[in-house]
Length: 309
Image (cartoon, rainbow, N blue to C red):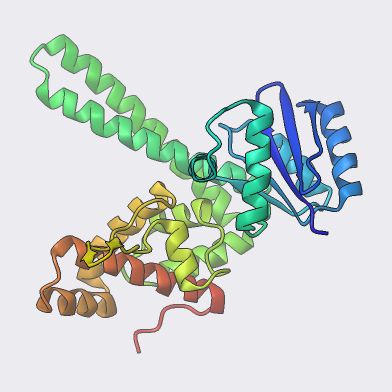
């Protein structure tokens, strides 16, 4: 009998539920508790252990479980919430959440994914920090343009200068980390071989989409939030839409598509064909982003640089 485990992670403890047996217990979220948890789960030999992403609290537990060789997946809280609504679980406590997560794992059977190592987590944090600094820079520059008081403008310009310096230092840290790793350096060079793909997009994909090259085009598009889904009921049929996925990846690919639709010969021609066929500009650009992701996925999968032919 296949065993599925759901774990609800909070600041101080881990609530655990086992299906189909219904066993439930809790352990402290510390070294002793994690040791007890790993020991009990190793004995159960589950097919899958699912944790809900909880603002970083799940990281230590995930590392401990993955280190013990247990099949692990960290799932999106939105997926669990929608699943709970679908099965009529409206009450919410930590034990109930653990039971819902276990039920989700048993029903959906998401594929286990390897936990990022320390360097991968550092790269993801640095890339996220770079994005935050840019957002602050954009906001401060807008405020500086609107400011009338010389004192306020001077304050804003000081902050902008400090943020620009910090951005430069973060870029240097990212560059040293990526170029210092033979595996990442090779992947970055492969991605950057595609006309229109710069370092920022390549490194965002390295950090935020480590599954690149390991999935088929439909699944990787879904993971990035670029897979269209149909809205239909009876005779009514709405336009296909994209949603979900990883917002940072989707945004980066969208910007990459803007550049590639102008300077990449294959994607430029594809974009022009869509526009000539009457596709709205935004839908055409989304299609370019999806095709760009498919190309990048194949390049990493096949370990072959871009070829114009």
